[in-house]
Image (tube, rainbow, N blue to C red; front, side):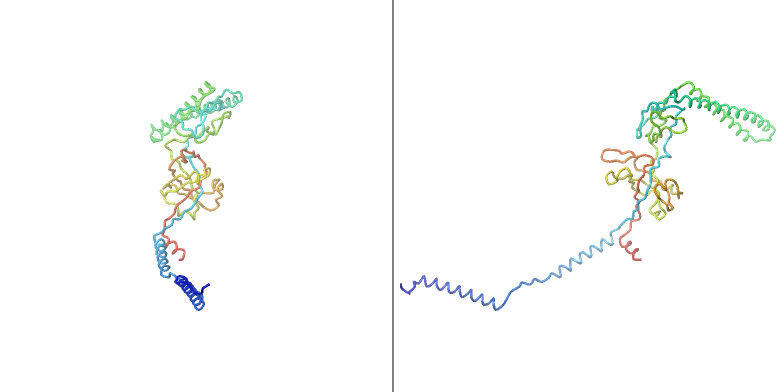
Length: 343
């Protein structure tokens, strides 16, 4: 074979030799220089600006921001002053009932039927009539004495030993006694004529409590039920410890959480502290029920609405229902709060 190369082959051989020389040169250069690392300069200016912005925002929030103290106290619904008690006319057994707690009733609506003809109540019914007769006899004696005394007063008045006002006062007492005995006689006649009667609502309102059920004996010494008038105020009593009295300001808004209804689910009811009902309370069964041993004040709160509204339902509330009240205190700036703590 010939050792001579063609021009094309000679050109290719030179290119290969040039490439090999460049790789050798680059490798030799790297070995001479060593490893190369890329160093990135830390952005100090950016961090400084971010810090300034953050500090400025915190300063503005600290100066403009505020907080409000709050206290949670115990209490209960006190509807007793507004409740009207309904008593039976005469002793007997409740044989029928047409009402229930929470029902809205109208004046004159029939609520119960009472029967005095049941064998088990004859003895009590007779005793009731005997008691009426004895009371009427005693009042007749009092009226007789009053009449005789009035005649004596008239003679003294003529002789100017007695003032006219004293004579008129004695005369009014006699008339009052005569009216009382007439009412007792009417009650006696009604009791003898009728062995059963109905109890009707004396006013329009909402039935708040029912003390007796069908089959119970009633004698007139205790009310059968209590009705709350529609126009009456719904009040709650709060038991405020002395150390939390600073939260109490007349007409201040408060929020009530009823114990039977979890407030996280059913919400709260808004109320307003009344202006005339702050007074110190004495230890009682109420304070013992709430385990309150320190001195406390009673504060009345007027309810915004006489029920708890949940979704589309109106949940009823009743007399004596326990609750918690959230009292809001003074709103202060954050820097004032920090300054008071530091000082």
